[in-house]
Length: 185
Length: 185
Image 1 (cartoon, rainbow over the protein chains, first blue to last red):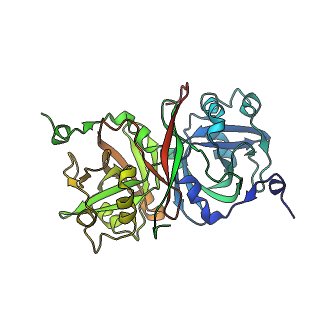
Image 2 (cartoon, one colour):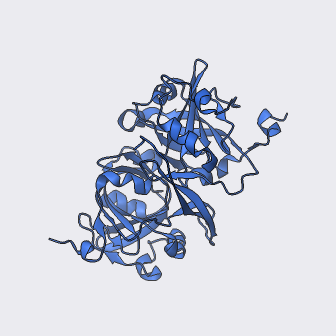
Image 3 (tube, rainbow over the protein chains, first blue to last red):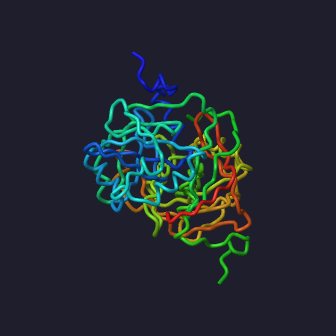
């Protein structure tokens, strides 16, 4: 059976390659959903913790509405935007979903995920469906350990122009490619 | 009193601005020292955990020699390299300090730090002296929580061409600047 994402030109992406999407440090859009109501937030404080299954650590401040949704549902999607979405990415980081439907307000398209209730953001070139798997660091650091259970990618995006936050609304956009011989994974 | 670093054109950098150096996801060189013997490793799995004092989470696999040094001394320096150092960065990631003096072998200059025994790497444009402050995540995730206690920067490097690993020796080099109005820190 062809999943709807594949019909829309996104392909399932091997879980063992997910680290290469996140370890360069892109700004991400984290989507969540509770009782049918979806939200999205912008963040940069994430880290790979293991290769396979891919484990991602992610700081979500308990001042954010997303904190409640993630804590209550234990599910989310990591969506990776590129430069074209810059204004929406910043707008999502400057508003709260408590009082606003950011998908509607900023024209982001929520699409159903395969394994979690939280939606994928169609405009992002990669989408990682995640489940929270370890609550022990939430209290002290608002640090959630997420297991990526399903990954999707737009195969047409060969060199994603990801955004990398340097603070106060200043971003670095992914630049040139450098390939060196290495035994490092 | 002018610290020797300032005489060499690196300046003390405000701790509250450190997040802007690390959250874009640069490859880092982590230096450690035990009983007078220094080592350095290459890694990308780091994350900001708090703004001030700056807390940084960092995965150091227990298969790495650096794990022992960091565990035993609870100190290290995060050094941020730029593109000019690419070959040395990859070389440091493909060798072990157990059997090799990487500073000597790869021509890196170790300089004394102000607050820790681990050396700064002079060739890197920024250096963050760190102490490990929370051992609770070391056992499960090899995840060290580091507090940055002193930061140094080369003020001549206005737009650092940092390296961002995409896996298997492929790097993205920091590209163009994008500035947007934002209330986000």
